[in-house]
Length: 126
Image 1 (cartoon, rainbow, N blue to C red):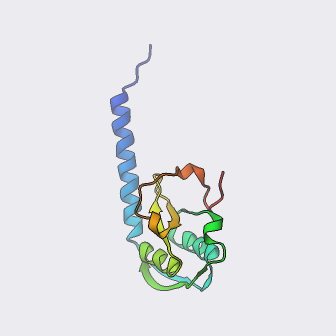
Image 2: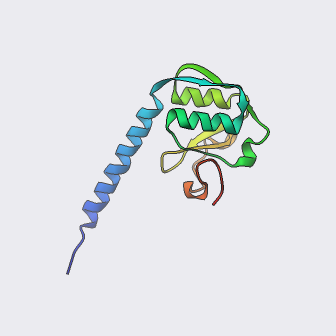
Image 3: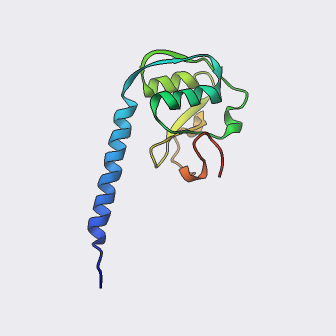
């Protein structure tokens, strides 16, 4: 009969999540040269995701008809995303998997209520 050390397995899983969170936090502090032009918000978010290497999810209806002022210069990933979203009344919430979820501004500070699995990268619902 095979036994599994659940406590050891749980501790290993917690350590992996902690390390992933630390890597994500360090990535958010990375300084990069951004050059994202003024364009529709969905395109600007795709450009940001490609440059930063971070997954950005959103509901397409939330960004439809909105424009990003763009961003240019050497910024942290966090500051660049704030610039991409500037003037749109939207905020960002980190998903449990470490991605970035674009939400209405007032929802950015609320606890996560939707599973990251409910949306695919690019904002499409499953």
